[in-house]
Image (cartoon, rainbow, N blue to C red; front, side, top):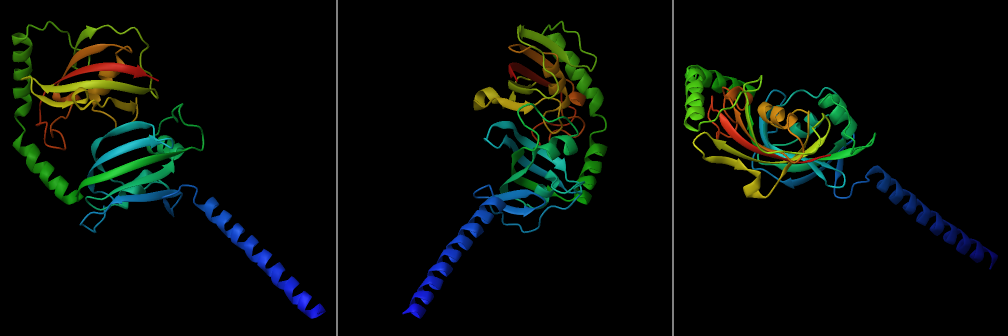
Length: 299
């Protein structure tokens, strides 16, 4: 009888120990992966695949990637959303956003969770925005449209630039004709951008690191639209003063505006898409552009 009781006691004790072990293991798993739906890949990066492409070859350092990119806070507040063509470099540190791009093939789409501190301070070499606290994480969604090897890109670029060498003078002629025909008496800023205030703004000016919300409509000098956040009903939001955000002219334009202002800007090509035109092919090389910009909000 005593032996039977001892066996029963041991079985009950082992059962309790097993339950404790399971709880410890589950707790350990939860601690290791605090982001449901994401898988830890390496160097503190978490990954969730949304779409698999038909191609299996991923990007290499030096390749040029065209992708729709979205940056979000962990609460899914978007602070950048747009299509960019960029050259992928060898990651300069463990956990760099470059590692995310190097994991994807053409036509693949995935979300990543990375360190916000590393992204802003090491990659963009800027200060951490006020809406992040030190040690925060951020989300990056990348939808790869195209991957172009560096050799192919350089070959196309050389042939293209040889072909368009004489376009610069032609652009200046078109700009002068437009200003004369529209009877626009506008003095250019130092950079060559023309500005016409349509509605005065009474709010504050933008400072580097501010999150700005803008509406813009982009047109060619013949009046044809090539982009409009108004028509899409999608105001554009980004952190002012950081790379990979907007073309040079638009950043300068926003920097001279006050919150609530709406202005018309004329960008010569060197302040827009330059000698190469846009990566999408929509904007030809050496093309002056009209941007009607409203600075909706400055945070």
